[in-house]
Image (cartoon, rainbow, N blue to C red; front, side, top):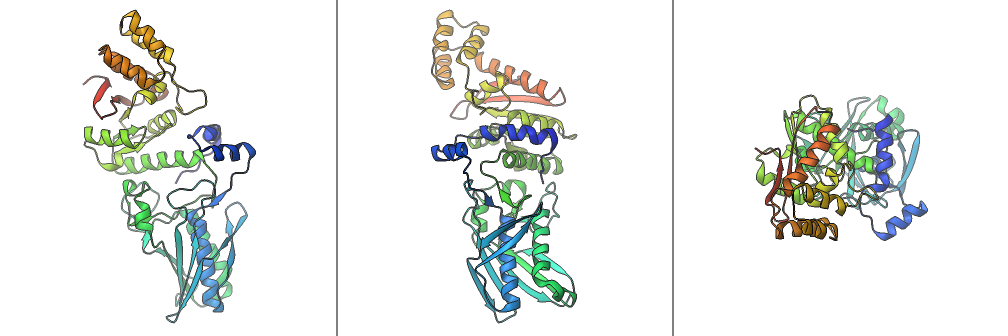
Length: 391
């Protein structure tokens, strides 16, 4: 589990405004400071648990509950429905609300079924249908256990103690978290790649979802690296997105956990790789636009003002001894893709390798020489058109 602190936290906060192309209405809300904070799956599961236990003890449903969050915060969530069973169980559901940063789990129904046991003061929390099971190391969770992270687990335990109180002196409480559509939702997440199978994870370090948080993306990168190294991988492939990852998988027959989407966070990802003692090699794979930005020395490729410098691309062409007229034409191009079309039309065969070499130089220096690095540049149909170093 990733928690940013110190300088790393400062760096991530600086990136927060630069993470992605946002819809106009979100940009306006960010400007006004009115983005709506949401709640994690952990907070939602805790609310459902508190509601279910209240129903089990009193025999009555409740419309909303207040749950305790880390750092002495609280949150009040609505209960969607409650069901008391004759078998001595009660189930509640709460709906996961991601605020203005909806992800794959936004709108998911998260349920908690509670019952009493004979084991005094024992609180047992498990995952049921739609909550993933851990099958790989590196996640800070025991293999075979439900994917309920430590902070949500503490929140769930605290909720049980708040509601059950003195009753725990004579009996225990069993809690089962389930997500009816969790298995389908998980296909839209990184869980299968991380070895969390059968459903989503119950997550959260603060209990809150901060809209468009760069830290969450950074956490995903670091978690992917944790799994890869825990599985014994000494090579990882960093791609700029889903398409480049698909092409890279065709090229490199490595296990699924070796592929990590770094998005725009090239510098951050390389530094994290350099900090992994048993990582030997990093392969960077992408298309002309993002790789050109990296070649320019931009470590966070969606920073405001980090547009591809067409003049830089023209200089690269000149370094490849392209005819002056071609260099001039590139200098007037509209986009990196337009430059690529000019390069192909004029058969400047060394150009793409030169871009990769520049990326290599930048990333090797950023990693302080602690990694073997290979750079792959794909054509938009998946063909490898640039590579450094050459095999």
